[in-house]
Image (tube, rainbow over all chains, first blue to last red; front, side, top):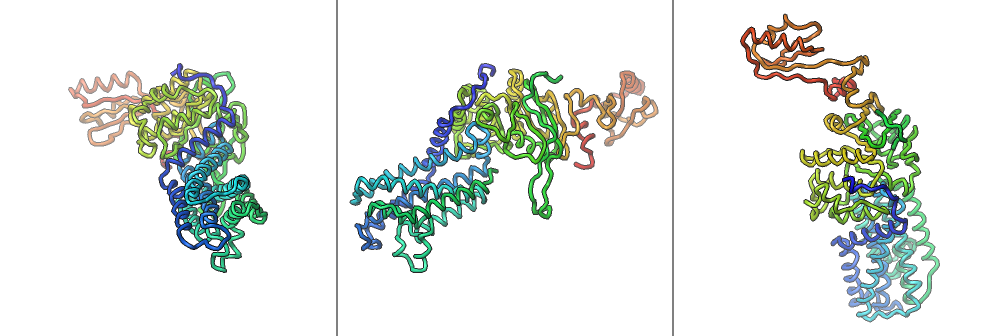
Length: 254
Length: 321
């Protein structure tokens, strides 16, 4: 044993710790079958569904051009909100958050690792969805990618903050129920894949203020029209800041 | 007995309130009330107490997992509440509930934790030493309680800590793995690590601890080496020489007349007797001589000194538990 034990040489560097945690969380997410259904299978089914039905006709672009930005927004919600929220909720239940926060990783590094994993998985989702949409005829202009991806990251930030808020304040079973239910409700009626003006008039006034509606709108404007809609950006920023502050204030580690 | 080097942990007058609790009409509950202890390098320091005595809360305050209400804590010379990565890298923590992700497999998990340190232990050697290779293909959720304990111990050790916290380290261990874990703890102590553990098992404390703090009602009531605790009457602080002699033999009560001064003879059940008090070699000789005279062969004869359990029960009150 004394051969095993050597003098303590301190922590690995902060970037290495975050990379390590990000890689670990990414692999865990990708190995989770239910998560993959939510992150890839259901969005692809929605994408195909929207391109073979006339639901999105007459919105200023081909079906796949209108559908794909919304599907990317849906992907962000799957990974950042539902997937990451459920994983964090159960990590909290099993004391994983407490154990890891006693290692050099710490609480800050843990959150940074989770954000990194969300971004990596989201990047892989963009590749898959982009490739399938490409086969269906999606050909966005090169210059719309930068604002489009920037808005997607902002949306992921808002949904990560919301997911952490839910995971850190209620029991994991409740997190599971809430994040899955909201994924379905917001996915269908939240203005994320179906634009606000195709929703019942009762909802039209509300969805612009939801993170789902704002992100769906922002991505459609960016990819279809090449513009960045500031009201939607403002809504996403507000959700990020408010949910982030609430998570910092109320997140329970045990 | 205490080493003069700077302690790995000093807790002075720790107070911790939790709540507000609905069960107390929204009032706070004081779970630790003025607990103090010192843990040295190269020693095993045990916090011994019943469930709910405040042991785990004390450890979690020292680990920075809970913010204390009052008192001071010095962990390797620093305040755990403001600990950075440098301090955390020198502290190993094994939580009572393990804190291991259920879907993980043991070796990738250990490699992951090892990645948080500049120069971690050799994971293969650690896995071999704790017998983790026997279940390395099983996910955490399918491990037995004892296997989880060994994996949690490995995860706490992998960073070469200077102080190691173990919350109920022998919980769920079968006799073999308990021996394995206890041998390892003893070796780590001999290599200079400061080890702080909680237990409600007297036997753990007797076998492992260099120094014991008995915790009751949120504060430390008695402290000392195991030998010191066994030798003293903690109610009156006089030296204790009490022993109990147990025997099974017919007609035991007839010996009462020949009993030495201050000794008590009790029939524990039919044919079984105990003599309690400051039993001397002369008392033993007179009992066996009396049997020789009567031509009685006792079925059993057993002499016991005080155990830590007796000390613990003396202090925390038999009627309370």
